[in-house]
Amino acid sequence: MPLTKEELQKSEYYQKLQEQDRVQYLNKLENARRLQGSVTVIDDNGNNIENKQPEPLRNDAGVFLSFEDPFNEGNSLDSLDQEIKIDKKSTIYLNDPFWNNVLDREFSEL
Image (cartoon, rainbow, N blue to C red; front, side, top):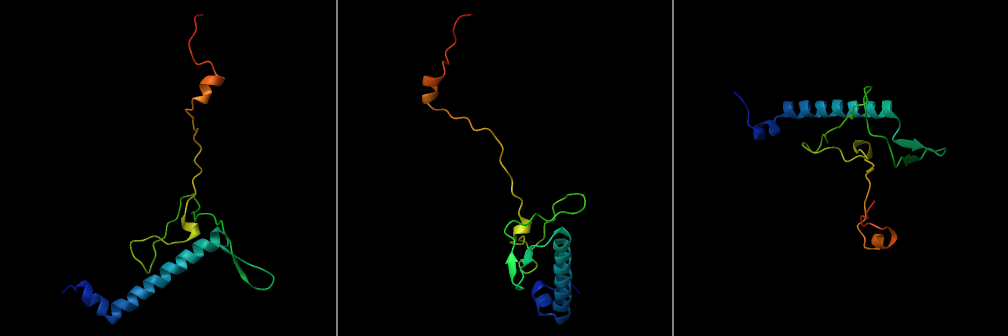
């Protein structure tokens, strides 16, 4: 007989299974970070220094790897390596009356 969500949350077996999946998922994330490059840098004194601009996690084919927060289902991880920065490279045209004084915009006869 199937269990309701409330009954599953009370089940010790389900809780152990969920925690086991969570640990496996976090290990997969840590392996992806280790292969991508270190997010934290350790200085000479053994202090951890957070790298401010880590690269987004990608696989061998260059596809972005997005991880869900295992403690807050339905939301992505709030981490710098889970963000993709996009440089907007579009031309901005100004429509300023000053340009009429600089350029002759009127058509003239040939």
